[in-house]
Amino acid sequence: MNKVITHSLFTDFDIDLFKSGKHFRLYEKFGSHLITLNGVKGTYFAVWAPNASQVSVIGDFNFWKGEEHQLNVRWDSSGIWEGFIPTIKKGATYKYRILANHTDEVLEKADPYARRNEHPPKTASIVWEDTYKWKDTKWLKKRKKNNALDAPFSVYEVHLGSWKRKVEENRFLSYFELADELVNYVKDMNFTHVELMPIMEYPYDPSWGYQITGYFAPTSRFGYPDEFKYLVDQLHQNDIGIILDWVPSHFPDDAHGLGNFDGSHLYEHPDRKRGYHPDWKSLIFNYNRNEVRSFLISNALFWLDLYHADALRVDAVASMLFLDYSREDGEWEPNIYGEKENLEAISFLKEFNEAVYGAFPDVQTIAEESTAFPGVSKPVFLNGLGFGMKWMMGWMHDTLEYFSKDPIHRKYHQNEITFSLAYAFTENYMLPLSHDEVVYGKNSILGRMPGDEWQRFANLRLLFGFMFTHPGTKLIFMGTEFGQYDEWNFNTSLDWNLLNFKPHQNFQNYFKALNKLYKTMPALFEKGFVQEGFEWISLDDNQNSVISFIRKGNDAKNDVVVLCNFTPTVLTDYRIGVSKSGKLKEIFNSDAKKFGGSGLVNSKLINIEKKAAHGKKYSAQINLPPLGISVFQFK
Image 1 (cartoon, one colour):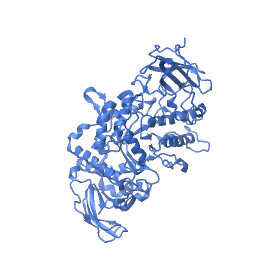
Image 2 (cartoon, helix red, strand yellow):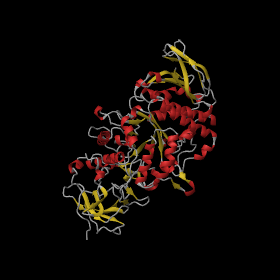
Image 3 (cartoon, one colour):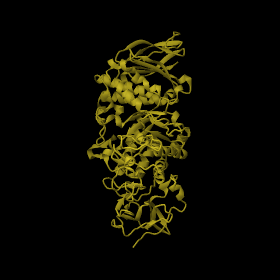
Image 4 (tube, one colour):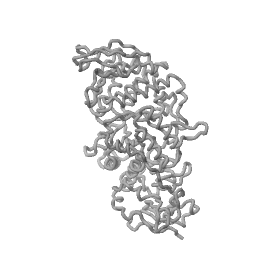
C-alpha cells in the first residue's frame, strides 16, 4: 500500500523555465522538505528522473523497502517525481529507489539535492532543515559597498581535514572548533580571505573533496550544516571572507551518485569522448542538457544564498574548455566548426557567471584556468567568460622555476622573473601558490629553495615579498606561511611543531607583517589589474639579478618603490631612477633581523638627487640586502 500523499511544491514553479535550463533556484523545490500538510507534519520529496518507470523513497522508516512509499510522476512530462510522506522527521535517512524504464535496472540513489548526507563510507541522504540565525549583516553590508577588485585580497587556502587535528583523539577538528582556532589564526596572520578546498560531500578522502556526490550538502566529516554556517558566520564577524572551491567539471561514478541516475545518462554526457574524464576517471556533466545547467547554476547560487559564501573558485576550467584536454588523437571529436573548443561548456560558464553576478553582484568567481584562452575574466558582453579573476599559472611556474636555481645562475634567467609583467594586465589575475604545488614529489615551497638554511629562508622571504608587491591578488596554501618542510599530506596535520624553532617563528612573523603591508598600502592593491598601477624602473639588470619597479594607487602620494636583489651579494649605493624629488623612506625590508635576516636595512631617509638614471630626471642610491626585498615610500 502506497502511503505517499499526492502533493506538490511546484504549483508556483515554472516548468518551462526548468526545461529550458533557466531556473536557478531548484533547491527551493527539489530534495526533501519538512512541511505541514492539513495539520500533519512530514516530509515532501521531489526528484528528477525522467527515464524511470517507478521511484520510491526508501529509508530507516520503511526498512529500506521500495513498495511502501512510491512517488507520483508529474503530468507535465517534466520527469519530476514527488509526494508527501507523513511522520517522516528531521534526521531520517533515505535514498531513492529507481526502476529504470528501458533496462529494468533497480538503482538506489542518494538525493542530488540533499542538504545533509551520512558520514562516509555510509552513503544515504538525511532529511534536514537548518535553523541557524545569521549574525553577519555588518559584513554583508560592507561587502556590498566595497569593490573587491580594488581592495586587498590575500587568500589562505585550507584543506579542513589536514590543517590541524586532535592528535590524541586522531580526529578532525569540527566546524565549531575551526570557528575558534582557524578563524583566530587567519585573523592574526592578517589574511583577508579563506579558501576551502571542496566541503561539499564526497566519498573518498584521497580525492581531497574534488569528487563530489552531495553537491548541496557540506561534508558531515566536520559536523552538521548549521555548524558549517556558524564557521562562515564567525569568519565574517572577524572581517574575513570565505571562498568555496566549486567543481562543475566532473563527478565520480559511485553507485549512489549522479552517474546513470535513472538508468540513463541523465547528468553525464552520453558520448564517452565527452562524458568521461581520463585523468580523474570520472564523469563529465552534459552541458548541453538544459536541466543539468539548471542543476549546476542552482548549486552555485545555493552556496552564495544559503551559506553566504563570498566567492566561488571554479576548479579545472581548462578541462571544460577544450574537447582534447588530456586526450590523444582519436579520443576526441571536434566541434561543429572543426575546432577543439567545447562550445556547450563555454556557453555554460558564461551563463553561470551572468547568473551569479546578476543575483550577487558583490561576490567573485575565480577561474583555475591554465591556458591562454582569451577573455576568461572579461565580461560576457565583451565576449569573455565573465569570471571576476583568473589564476596566473604562468607567473607561478616561472617564479618557482627561477627561485629553484642557484643564485649564481639567475643572471641567465632574468626573463623568467620579469616575463609575467608582459601580460599581467590581460586578465584580472590572482597569483596562486596552491596545494597543487606542494604534492606529488614537487616538494614544499621551502624545500625548493637553494642554499643553506639561512639562504633558503631568505629566498622564501624574497619570493613572497615579490609575490605580494607584484600586481594581482594573492593565494597561498596552508603551511607555507610558517615554512612547512615536508610536502602536504592530506591524511595528517600540518607540522605545527616546526614553530618551536626560531627560523619558522621568524618566517611566520614575516608573513604576518607582509600581509599587513599589503593590506595597509593602497598602492599594492588599488590598481592591481591595470597597467597604470605598475611602472618598471629597471628590469634588465641581469648582471646583478636585480629588478626595481613602482606600484601606484589612486593617490600618487601613496606610490611605493620596490627593489628585489635575487643574489646573496650585498649591493651598496645601488642607483635607481625616480620621477620625484624629495626623500625615500624604507617601510619594509625582508632582511630585518626580526625576520631572521642579516639586518642590512636602510634605517635613515634617503636623499633623492637631481641626477638622471633609468630615463628619469631624479635618482637615489640604496643599499640592497642579500636575497632581499626593500619597499620605500616617497617623503
